[in-house]
Amino acid sequence: MSDETDEHKKKIKEELEKLKYEYKIQIPKRIATARAYGDLKENAEYHAARERQGFVKARISQLSLQYSQLNNIDKSRIAKDRVGFGSNIIVLDLDSKEKIEFKFVTSSEVNPSDGKISISSPIGLALQNKFVGDEVEISTPVGKKKFLIEKLITIHGNEYTS
Image 1: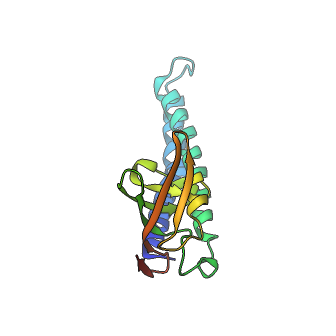
Image 2 (image 1 turned 120 degrees about the vertical axis):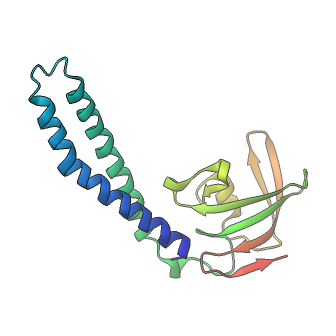
């Protein structure tokens, strides 16, 4: 794994541990305290604690999936010389001459405004297994775009430029 991926796994694990503690220890105490106030129908503290419990349970599930996905990545099966998971790339839009940077991440980390895209996205699929210097045509909602791959840094740390 890359240092960035290891750091991401560490953050997920830390958040999971905190949320599990809150879910198993703190929230049940808040619910028990709120129950002691009586009528549950109009008990704001009780409803707030139950709502928090639902949120924390959902977040634990989401983080557990992310952690599992990261653990299941076999770095030895990822190409060392072409675009793949974990790659950072810079492409040149051949029409606008704009340079765009992409980072290929798990589906749970996707954030297009930060340039973080999934390898299974339309752009990711078009760029996957391509080399520096390759031209790629990608269909977008606004039409076809042509890109030239100018720089690649793989998950292994190998760097290639045109």
